[in-house]
Amino acid sequence: FAFPGWETNLESLLSGPENKLLPRKICLVHNAGMYTKDSALDIDIRVLRQIFEVNVVAPAALNKMFLSSMTDGSSIIYVGSTLSEKGVAGNASYVASKHAVAGLMKVTCQDLSGRSIHSACVCPGFTETEMLSAHLSSNPAFREQVISMHTMGRLLKPAEIANAIFFCAENPSINGSVIHCNLGQVER
Image (cartoon, rainbow, N blue to C red):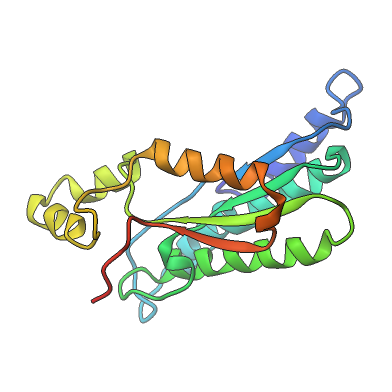
């Protein structure tokens, strides 16, 4: 998803008669994410574009591809971040893209008005994923510092995020909501 044009190949694959999606209840989860450490003061525009392609453009393109097959009760769930609503130094591209993810969910909710398809954005805190492990593995002291930022004294487990996503997919009452799932992140 990091390079423009990928959607054309997927669209042509899905549009063939043997692969045509029949209308049905679908839960489309936008969970792909790309991260880099960077500063707004010296941002690499090429990397910024790649991050936006994965984190924002891909969900918009997939929505366009799947919406015609989504029936009543379907859902579009975006995975944001605690950084979808705040800024942290040294994370410019990621923070900007995750703000855009939350915004895309909000406009999706408004544009789907009357369609009986709901959307939400689940914003995980620090979760024990490959991406975070790669980021924290080189510095055990920083890992402990990150853990101390949670009122529960631990990192989230991927299954906890999956449960939150499933809850959102099954509950239209949360339509348009940004749901923080972060074990009570301590603000400093």
